Length: 114
Image (tube, rainbow, N blue to C red; front, side, top):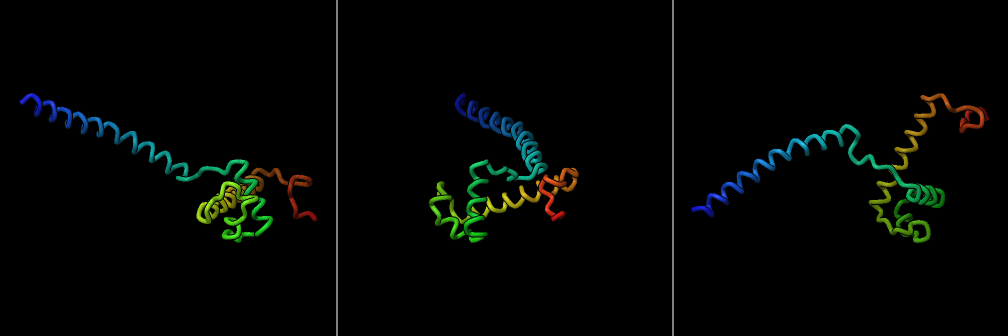
C-alpha cells in the first residue's frame, strides 16, 4: 500500500539521516576528548567563592555547603568538591605556566627569595 511504502521510505530516510549524523557526533566527541572533557573553567564569581570558602574553612567541603553567606548559590557538597578540583587544577596550570614562562621574579609572585 502507499502508506506502507511511505512508512518504509521514512524509516529508511531516518536511518540515512542518522548515519549522516553519527560521523559529526563522533568528530565532536573526539574534539572534546582532545581538549579534555569537562575542562570548563571557573567563572570569576565561582573562583571568588572558592577562594573565600578556602580561606574561611580550608578544604572542609561539608562546611562550605552549609555557609549561605559565601555559597550564595547553595551548591551541593558534590558540586563544591568538583569546583575545588577545578580550582586546584587551574592553580596548578597557572603555577606551571609561570615556571615554564620564566615570568616569576622579584615582585612577580616568586616567594623563594624571602
